[in-house]
Length: 206
Image 1: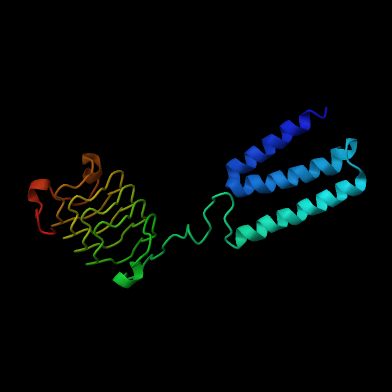
Image 2: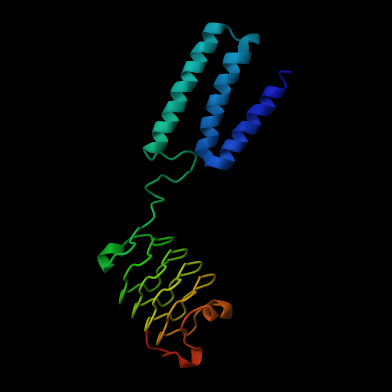
């Protein structure tokens, strides 16, 4: 029956990796190895040696947990600092607030970003429900997969902006420049008010 243990160990490590990533797989591997050595390692390892190995595995496992919470990278897993999501929900946002920040997936629901220069910025996946972008400069901005439900884009510059997959349900873009915008008809059809390309103020934000 010993042949079953390696299969069980591999299954446990694989499941931990799927659920918790590299960190989970590493921690599971340490704990599984120590358990196997302690309880079924008597065939090749003496009891004192098994106890020492198990104790070492516990220390190593504790080190992995502490390291994870301290932001140490494990086998290329991004640290918590590098994966920090910008949270500006409900705030009046200034240029200083976003200078040098990675805005991908940013939390912007209810935020006021009126008049901000966001040209060429990557806001892919941003959560901006009910946010205000009135007169904001968003030419060539990446807004793909952004949640813009109920957002106010009135008079904004959206020249050549990419809104692929963005949710525009209830959004308002009165007077916005949508020249060259990348967006599907079904997306703009869900908006509360969206200008037709021929009605757009072409060239306004060049």
